[in-house]
Image (tube, rainbow, N blue to C red; front, top):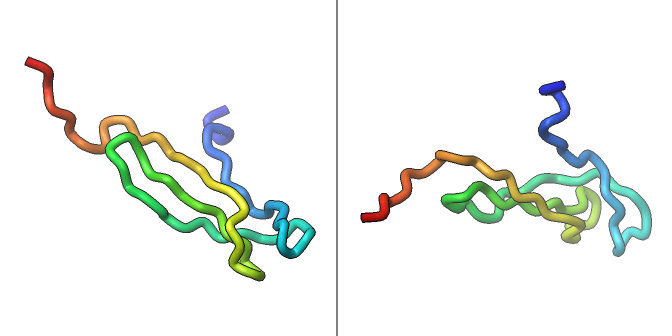
Length: 65
């Protein structure tokens, strides 16, 4: 069952191409909570989706006093 914890998009619908197209995953932001990615159409380069990967414990957080 561990194989289904993460999903990666291979194809998404592109509004500009008006059909499903292969996508490329591009890192947009690296934040303390995780990384934000954009999915862009591999044919025309339009933004077709986004994803946020939570990475607990990736950065050290200040302790409350």
